[in-house]
Image (cartoon, rainbow, N blue to C red; front, top):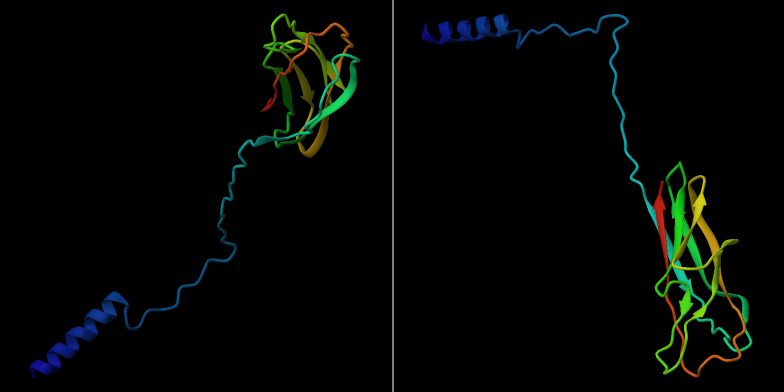
Length: 159
């Protein structure tokens, strides 16, 4: 008798909870749901600078000597800027006794500048854009013997 009551209690509990005899669930006609998709693309601007290892001729002058090339990548849809900056304010300097700084002009992708820096503006995003950098040094037949140098730094920034 105890066995029969236990079985009857289990069956009653199952009926009440719907565990054994649950009716299948049906979706209402015309029901729908949504899934929102989101993503973010980070701003990425890079330059890869290649030094051409060029030598400039100060005595007889050098005209538009390619000193390097730059590969630009920037995904800013509003564009970006490239800044070319000289460590010596646009001059070749020497530590030789009596040497004077020699001014020069830099050209980057058709834009020229002299002095400490100049900027080239791009109106839109660009990828793998290769630009040439060249330098023009006027002839200076009275330059003092010695090594002359400067460093150009190329910087990219999104707008």
